[in-house]
Image (cartoon, rainbow over all chains, first blue to last red; front, side, top):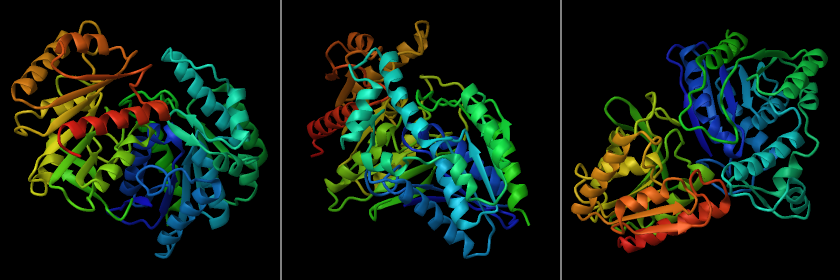
Length: 252
Length: 222
């Protein structure tokens, strides 16, 4: 597994495990997560980023499931916990569900999320819409429909989402996963940062704020998860806000 | 990572360039540098560079895939992109690391902005074994005459220097007609249906990969 550790110069004792999303999302959010890790290290906390097995620079190809992703996050946490560090998790998009599950299992000090998927099913539907949108933008539209693609998936076929395989195993492993259910199993402070992109998403987060005490903040950011925009930098406010909140939670 | 991959930071002058080196199982004396598009981490769109590195490593080539400055794990920042100022120092740092290990030379494969970077290495690199240019952008918009002139000059220089070149485009990639007009048959251009720029499907990724392997084979890197 590819793991990168941002080591703090002045050690304030905490550790944060960064759980990326998948597919195009993982590339779109890559730099923001690197900068977040460096910002945390500058505040005195170790930040560990990983590429789940079967993704990114890690070994393997395609055999990814919700459980394997959570196991990878826990494994990273176990490494740093050996040094007695309080651990927090942060995840973006689909990675937020992984971070929330790991935080619940590991008894984390805190959980932060960027644009968290509130329901895995909605995320995968959005990913397929992203493919169809891209084909339209590129005037490369095939005759497939979202319904047709999900029927293929249900029939046991792997479908192509913007160059990444969405396997039936991955899809089924996330079936029924919701952020609300995962937050039920966590006992730590949780923050969700949304980028102000979708009213429906903001309403879903507001409901979680009311039902689960989720802290919700907005930081406008132009990260486009499905139509990659080369070189656009994540806003400093997003990095600073999130690293500041996490540092406060895991600091001694 | 696989057991044959080594992550490292290379000194590129103003910044540290992150690279993943794939060590060949049976070294053939050759190397390949993979240059991603601007802002794209060395994993590559659709994980192209990861799969390609491992395939080339299994065929005996050293491979370096790298994060340009300001992208992925590298340090540094990038403002507005300028096609006439590619990230040459990053590519040369990778080529420098390979130099002592690849007596039979290196090839460069660059995607989009990375293709412009590859072309800019001619001269500094001597005569590389070849260059595969994946959907090189001709200009940043209709009025970018400097970008056009720069590409023409660098293509002329590479061709004059006898560097074997190959280009790959999708039939609907916007830069293809202008590029073909510019090279006037002096560079073989492989064309796949639809758009390849951005590599947004498994079919596109596999098509691009097939063309890269075929071009490297022509360059004598089996």
